[in-house]
Image 1 (cartoon, one colour):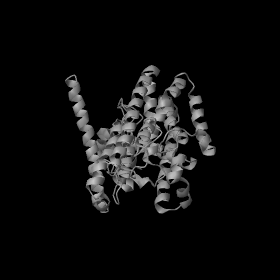
Image 2 (tube, one colour):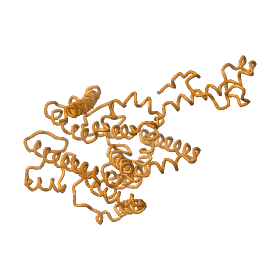
Image 3 (spheres, helix red, strand yellow):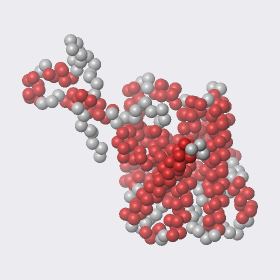
Image 4 (tube, one colour):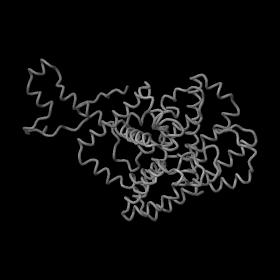
Length: 418
């Protein structure tokens, strides 16, 4: 439980009307005129509540940062969940945070939504031409990494090493499979996760072209219509690439994030016009998020699990799951906004680097599985909850260390003009 920090009254700005000679007195000034009240009831509750509210507000995310670190934190949390659930193991304390792929939202939904959100924010700042250059270069890096992960994992499995997926079927034609990997027709060992990202990136320039010309409604209409068709006539919107999730419904997360990011400032202004409505909706979102956690933990609604939990509802992104995903995406954003300072001090050192180097984190968590699965009896060792938690924490530290070392090397290489 987070404790409210002890704040001195000198740490918050004076209340309006507290200046000398004003007849509008602040809370403490008004009660100072009533010594009988102070003797009978002690320190005025109004002043205490105002001081406490200020302390709570001091936890909020500051709007002075040019780069929104909340997005890095949220993407870092999604990658944290991904690493823990993918590496797996018999027992770990971290499973209480990740849900072990048995909750109403997984790391994947957050990853694709935040990826689209980030692109939309950058595009609105950079303009169309500069954004297109950035997107094409990023797409090439993603595509290259996708193919290398696929072929590298096949090679590792071919020589007898254990990887995240089941052993690669050696009865397949290796050359034919390699050609399919290059065209994204084949995937293996998680490369399909990135292949879906590549597919979305290839469509992004067309979406931005329309959005910069004021036709965001057309992009939104096309995305929503594609999702509806995927739920009714899924075979009509199939794409000839191999991905972990069904492309047609999952594009709504990515392009929904793209639209929100692109119009973020306009939406923020609209959101701030009615403070009472905004606060009421935000409180309702948080209460609903907590309520569904209680429902899940206590098993109060088994039918809901049948509808939204499991590989098939996730792959198809059925509409009840989509609504719950939207609920928890907003709840997490509110949580990190309201409690930024304590969460940043507690977890920012880990989650922000993971989130700001998402592709690096994804690649390294697959690489770490090779020594973990092949040099150790990992299932047996992780059956102890403390060892399982220790292995997970060590893996996160290794990934973090690799990010920091790489950035240090890059900075030194840049200093020497390399």
